[in-house]
Length: 123
Image 1 (cartoon, rainbow, N blue to C red):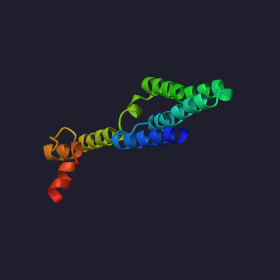
Image 2 (cartoon, rainbow, N blue to C red):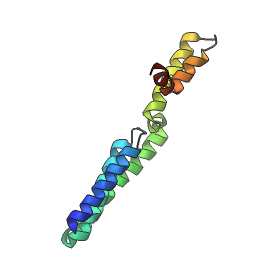
Image 3 (cartoon, rainbow, N blue to C red):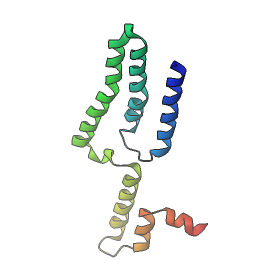
Image 4 (cartoon, one colour):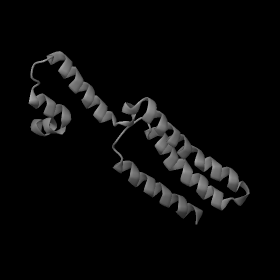
């Protein structure tokens, strides 16, 4: 019974890992929350002697994630954006600073916004 419970959790976690593509500053604590909270609460159900300790231990990672979200929201909001968005934004800012008041090549902007177009043309 316990083995089946943990195998189901691991299958669901593996399925979720393939679906997540956005990377931000909160991703590590969100992964920690995803892994530890269900495990702590599952063990709390299985081991009633340690139930209160495990329930509080399972509440700790979501609490840290919520505090981290509010910190980044108030102090450093670009960290909440995806890594890809930040890289594209920086590239466009660099192009704008180089070009100054002149026009920016639209093809270059399209390649920054959608790099898969370049990969498809090369194949």
